Image (cartoon, rainbow, N blue to C red):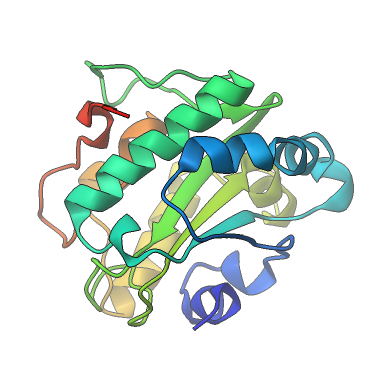
Length: 209
């Protein structure tokens, strides 16, 4: 399985058009060292994105422990985002999020982004299913890439979100609309295992390392 296979099988209408930069393959759980080592690549990706028109920067974490359970995925996602925050600023991982529906975007080098992960802990009926691969794939997706592909230049409207949810639902992989419609992008960085599960409060994972 590769990230190309995963996005090809995705029902997101933007996935079929996706242009990915060279993936960063990670064989360690030391995300702080990863981000520091690849800081120029990450920075260049976001600074030059409107010129290169890449749709995502992909990290492939080959250590199964990264995403083999929802608890591990939450813990390592927390550490990964904290490492990005430490290196670049542009956003902050709070200890508590009081209003899930208050508009908030993380940003690197001034570019707002989504983050999506495909991990082995997700079942086949999840939009985050990675088809049995033991690696975890994390995509950092600039908002501007979605806006390029949207006919009206705005890919994050409620109408577009609803269209994407309906496409996944028709494929037997429904999103929980109560979560996907929230305006705070941080709270959606780790998706629940199945529809109807409570929102995953991954930001409460204390970083002990």
